Image 1 (cartoon, rainbow, N blue to C red):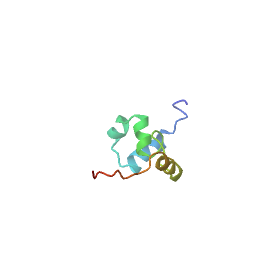
Image 2: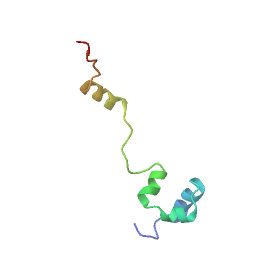
Image 3: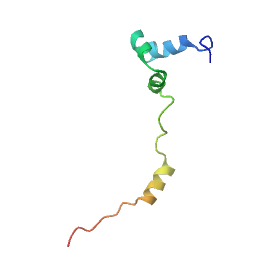
Image 4: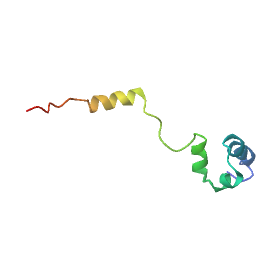
Amino acid sequence: MSAAAFDWASMMRAGINGLGLRPTEFWALTPAEFLMMLGRGGGTAPLGRDRLAELEAGFPDTRKDTTP
């Protein structure tokens, strides 16, 4: 994507107006940090019910009897 095609004005509005960043804070961020602050990009999706059920089946909670 060329610099001319990138919508800097919208990004600056999102950072400065939306997130309350000062201009120096906005320009100090990496694109990955900025997108993370906007709730986009990077990271994994939260654990869903299906994956939780898989983990529960694979690692069931069992009580170990500790009495002799």
